[in-house]
Amino acid sequence: MTIANPLVGQSRNLVLAAMIFAVAMTFIDQTIVSIAVPQIQKELGLTSTGVQWAVNGYLLSLAALFAFGGRLADTVGHRKMVTLGVILFAASSAMCGLTPKGSIAEAWIVTFRVVQGAGGAIMFPAALAIVVQTFALRERGKALAIFFGVAGGLTALGPVLGGYLTEWTWRAIFWVNIPVALIALVLIVISKPVTEHVPARMDYRGLVLIAGGVTLSVFGFQQSTVWGWSNPGIGISIAAGLALIIIFYFVERNTESPLMKVHIFNNRAFFVENLVLGIAMLTFIPIFFFASEYAQIALGKTAQQAGLYLLYFFAGFVTASQIGGRVLDKRGAKRPVVIGCALAAVGFGLWASKVTQLDFNNQVAYVILAGFGMGLMLTPASTDAVNRASRLSYGEATGITQTVRNFAASLGLAILGTVLVDQMRSRVTTTLIGKGLSAKAASAVATKISQSQGGSLRAIPHYVQLDFAYSIRTVFYAMAGVMAVAAVVAKIGLQPGVQKESEEASASVS
Image (cartoon, one colour):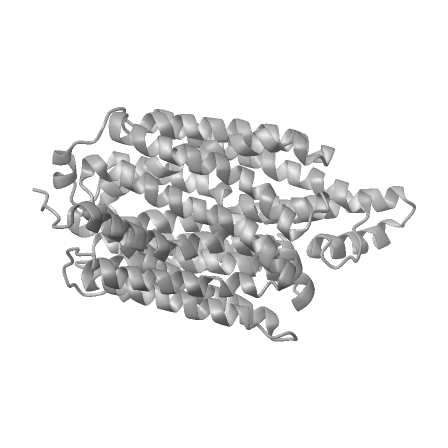
């Protein structure tokens, strides 16, 4: 039986606002850093791999620790974990903005990006669990559409705000989190969200296994562009990471108080929603990184203009997110998830077909379409997955879902980043040989350019812009294929219809 929540009316709306501001920082940081990548890379002297770790270290930390954060929220208290996460996130943001120049720059910024991720992993599951417990099942799709839509809208400000702030200093893109955090903390104090939690022992063995598995597998893909696939360390790292994840699954099945109650995957809807989310997230976060670099390198845009470029994607995303949430409440998750994945696939494919023309005006409609498709599927899939958990396990279910999402995002950035660098190296080598350089000299120059992705060049030559555009085209076509696979999985795996209150009450993960 579902326990009635005492919060109604304005109180519920205030709680929703507090949680939106809390998680807004994590959404903003998924995009705002991508805008400043070329400037950060140039000023701090980071390699292409180093700057990818500055982006990916954050995602990797989120993925590795989300299950831990979700479990903490359900056992220690959701409000406590939101507050702690906000403080940790804001403090590490300040430290990222204080990154010194010199030899320690790369280690410094990557370290505090990882700490940022830890703060987000503690905060996000608790915040989403608070929203889920505050609203009844029949109102949850609408509430979470607002939650993800407004947060997505604030995320949409990330690229634009990042562009303006980067014109002043890239360091300000991290400092902007501090006032957002202060607003979130004030709203939490005022709204006093009330949720239920049950104290339990923490499964540190499971934490070590999942964190090690996620880190090693993503690290292997990420380092492949530096070490090369012939290096045995790559295969060993990936294999060891996947092995640890498999071991984690079987260990958790037989642990009395597990970090992650993996039996919830026996629920078909939960399993399929997470599978679809995992596939889709291979593209969703990486698109901001690659689109930003394309705008600044291939199109020659400023950071501010690149922010506006990504704003078109969010225009489609935020609009469709509201539609998806309402369709979920009325008809269930299957229709918006399947249609959204299909539209995103078409959008990415058409977008890819235009990038080599180096004319943004020819791409706008397809950028919006890709964003619309992602928004239409993301809110229903995420909400429906969390709805499958029992009331006392919303934080844990959110932790599982977000672990899947962020692991996939990290993996997508690593794999697609490898594809981009390899494509860029190959195309620039061919171009330089055609200009009369020897194969050896052309390869050396191409390796340097592909690692910096043009960031170390004072003026980017037209041939580099074009070769980068062709390389991005390959990445975008891959994204289209990924979303097509997600659409097929959703079509085959999801059941039509709206979930009922009785299903929520009985779908315990214990």
